[in-house]
Amino acid sequence: MESILIPLLTIIAIDLVLAGDNAVVIALATRNLPIEQRKKAIFWGAGGAVIVRVTLTFIAVQLLNIPYLMAAGGLLLVYVAVKLLIEEEADENLATANNLYQAVKTIVVADIVMGLDNVLAVAGASHGSFWLILFGLAVSIPLIIWGSQVISNAMNKYPILVYIGSAIIAYTAAKMFLHDNEMNAFIPDAWNLPIEIVVVVGVILIGKFVKSSRLKTA
View 1 (cartoon, rainbow, N blue to C red):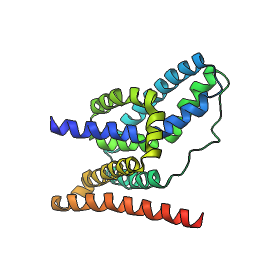
View 2 (cartoon, rainbow, N blue to C red):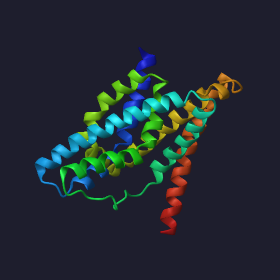
View 3 (tube, rainbow, N blue to C red):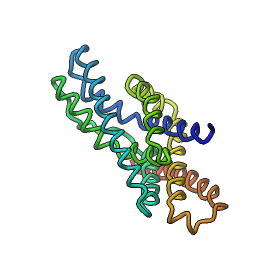
View 4 (cartoon, rainbow, N blue to C red):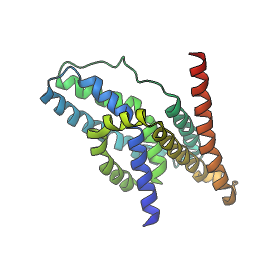
């Protein structure tokens, strides 16, 4: 049970941490619609985006079986974890839709373009279990759709939540790197925990350094 619970909680945490992009996409794409159409656009747009994201995550899980690709994905996910810490603001240039169809299309397309980090992180945390991905998304989707704005505001109000989320993603990145069959062949198991700690602490320190440097030069 514990072996399933930990990846499941990790997937849910990743989905919630990265829900800020969803909140911005939904808010900007639907802001000019009447209230009733806005509700429909959020439902159908988020639903369509989730279906596409599940499909892409399943493909990503299969691709991660290719030698060294999981390790490469782990390194890319380290970048995502740092980016989460230093990202200052969302893209305000996202097109605002004037009708239901445009809004749904905007939400789905923008989510595909911006969702690589989520797909990669969830694929790594699932350990290849497609049903774990589905269950994790089933639990987190309602929270993302109806609570993404609340989550986004909470992360702005309590910066510690951003650091916790970034640490979770960094930990997932380290796990992906270490679980690559090619890497696992010459990295002793005794090194796993120290490497995971170094990656998590390193990501947080780099994120803090880059962010403080930007503030000084601003």
